Image (tube, rainbow, N blue to C red; front, side, top):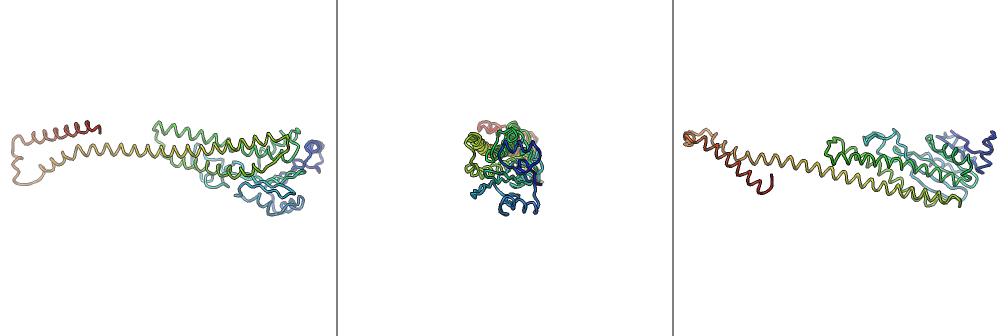
Length: 320
């Protein structure tokens, strides 16, 4: 679908006023079919391969400057199934860049801005209404900066959500609550953070090459600062998740050791007692002790003495 956001060929007076105010043409295209791709290529003089790059589901961020126009691809956070809640695993949100984010492509020069994407993007209309229609943004470069800022903001929201989930799991781990699927949850969180970090890493080169008007330099710097902040946030997230996983494994090993320790103590106490009971449980005809009138109390006394001796020895060794 091709939408005319700002176009000199619009007929409504309000649109003409906006074009006069903004001074450039903005076409927004969602999920174009082959005929629309051909129409776009012919009208703007764009190569087919560049338009198809915009529609490749797994294409990573990139920047090209041909001289006639600038071509940018960025990805915004948009999981296909809305994202797993509370760190729970989902089938379609943790495996690939394509499943966790969506792509938007820009073609622009001094006179026009063309945005191409597969899915509806709410903040496109918000930018037009808030910045372009009011005259705050007057060039394609400035509009691109606003769109990219909104793209990065989607990762900021997800980073805050991931931090909250990690903090919740960390608190439960140190309170020694049982979390049967903790490893699975941590895998989901780590996979999300890793994919977002990968996208942001590739986006860094794009932001380094983007230019804007002199009056919008501060806004572009804000975008770069936000990107740096997000890279640090996701790197810290990955460290926190890895550390939490290591702590969980250590605590699990400690619990296993405690169980083995208890079982070992029981076995040490009962081994000599079982040995004594085993000897006098043998069915030999000639065992004089069996007919001794003090044989039974002596055996019990020996068992008690051995148990006390083991207990005192364990205490001295501080094993109890």
